[in-house]
Image 1 (cartoon, rainbow, N blue to C red):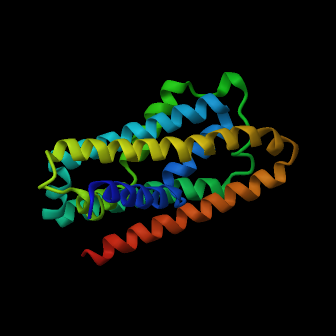
Image 2 (cartoon, helix red, strand yellow):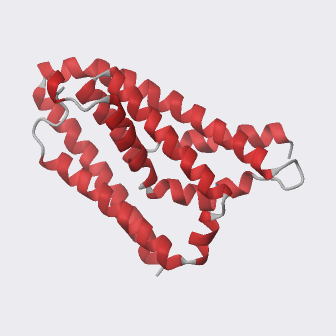
Length: 211
């Protein structure tokens, strides 16, 4: 398998994973709907920064340590699942969560960036990716592993920027439509809540299977 083929295959895998509905996608969409395009792009930046932290932890062997201590990894999965479930439950019970907030009530881009980064770090899907998928694309005989990890990390970041950036633009453009159709905003919010609850249950099930 050539290195070029390996990189293209990795891109396709990452693209499929990023497209899956989950916590990162919900945060970007919610930030864009509430605060507009700038807030959405700040959320995208925070998600990418969190992904960089995941890459660094993988390079430093944190992922391997988690694999050696299944109890710690289970606790992390359950913590992330509870966080996702809490956000999903909040979306289910809200009546106007997707309506744009007044300018004076909007969080700053820096706050949204930090929240997005924490959201990414609590995302169980990212840890599963680093443990199960990322190592499969490292080739010890094809150069330093830190260089390979950097290339794969750049592909991941560019894919996230493309997918989540497009989502941020689309969601910020849709905010005006939701103002005119508040009933649709409630329906979309509750659908997102159901998706997040399903994601939380899947993460909890994976943690239970590791017991």
